[in-house]
Each structure stands twice: as C-alpha cells, then as structure tokens.
Length: 131
Image: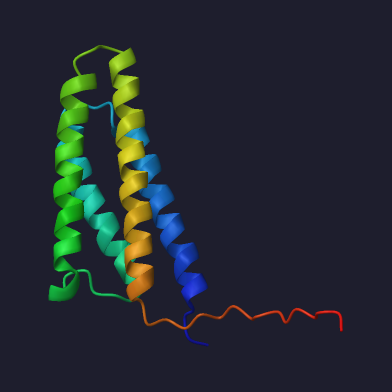
C-alpha cells in the first residue's frame, strides 16, 4: 500500500513535536541558537521527506533557505534578549526557542503538504438530504 498524505501528516507532526521538545530542553544552553538553527534546517528537510518532496530542489530551495535564515535571525534575537538574564531568562529563552521551532515546523508542514504528490486517502462520506 503506498504512503498516503494522512500518513505523511502524522509523520511530519511527530517530527515537529520532537524537534520542538528538543529546542525546549536545550534552548537555555549558551550558544544554543547556533545548533538550534541547524536543527531547524534538519527538521525542514525531514518534514519535506515525510511528504516525499525534495527540500533541496530548486523549486523548494528558497523556502528551505528562508526557513533556515528565519530561524537564525529569530534565534539570535531570542538569545540576545533573554539569555542575558540568569534563570528566568534562560527559561524564557527555552520556551521561545521551542515556540520558534513549532512555528517554523507548522509553516513547512503546510508548504510541503501542498506540494506533495502523495494520494489523499480520505473517504468522502455522502450526506443524504431529505427529499
């Protein structure tokens, strides 16, 4: 049985949840903005693979790079703003890094889902109307 769009949705959502959790757990670490940018880029690539779309094809490369650059900019701003305040700032930084990963993940799920050639296996349910 071929992979369906719904199976790709489940896989992509799990990937984004895992990467978001990783960002929440490690976002407080000094310098984490650098490796979390790489993590966001890996997440983008994995989500594209879930939908069987090549993230590095020329048609999709701009979106992939935009996600990576957006991640780097947001991560740098978050790190500079929150990372300077011990304890409370570190907690805020972790939460913000996780939120950033989730937002990027949600956007790339929509992007690659729309470009996927996987079959939609939803079964339409006919609605009976009274005559």
